[in-house]
Image (cartoon, rainbow, N blue to C red; front, side):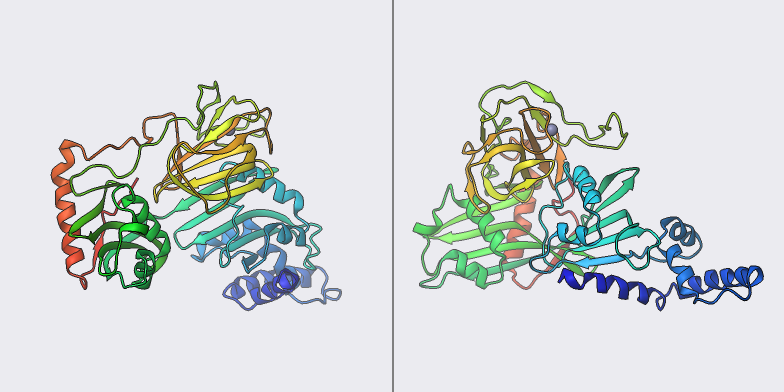
Length: 446
Ligand SMILES: [Zn+2]
């Protein structure tokens, strides 16, 4: 599809002349025409669009115009990802391979450019006055990554490099209950998916209840399940993000349950259902060679280069262990981060391991706490062998050596009354299948 991109770009610019900016172009164009008519009334012959176009691509012009006219800042080019597309192809189409390496340098601490999903939007603001678009004089000033209605990343030029800013909107979460019965010859997974529960959420339920109930062995036809699922909305639009708020599974006269409370899951008695994380992903105390620092600046360029992880001075080949149970989401090679692994532990937690020499896991694999997942190394842009370890809570990096790393054992005494109230509410919702309600206090606030 990228072959047609250049064509799209050209037609996009042609389209600009017809879009709401028309009046501004006309005014600008006419002014220039008037000036030219006064200065050289005979020699001036070409159309006004040639004069107006370069100004449109100039961000200063756009910014100035926005002070008087409230209008969305229109990108010069928008790319909607289709199957098989790569970011590299697009950048080389504009002859911007050097720019891409500068963007990837900024991406090292957010790693949002490695997974290109169909339907994601990329918006480009370009500067340059070569309207044949052979790429010679094009400068990329800004790139926006639209990863969902609730999630955007902006890469903004600053001198020769880029800085990034990530926006994740909390939205509102609407709850509904999904009930079902396991049919003969069918598994819990199949029955739950058939009732409309997303596969990812079925996996979460499996993980939460597996220490008490073996779904593959002990479930049988006739077993009932009740789930309260919340879906994220921005305005009236669903983002596609969902979360299990509570589940009850009825098996052989017993009820197995899990309820979310303050972003963690507990059973009906208030005991934690998720194992605590290990503090370190290595089994010896290595020296911390660089600490977590979200406000770090590059000493020479002055660009903000947050250090979103903790560096351990591990010799090449040191074994890395998963600090908690989870699923491998990425095994990727990045120009600056090197070979890295990402593990999603629950809706809330994920971890990353950069500059590896070898991965011992593959994408989609389930891993257990303490499982060896990789060997440390010195790949990517790294000044020496070390492990860069990141811990994220609700998609934001936190200091893994700080106090927020979860060690949840159970609902604390002070919160028990609130927890019981929440359980009662969730059960009420499970029992009244048609009832839906908006939960503004959804556990996504952290
Ligand atoms: Zn680091």
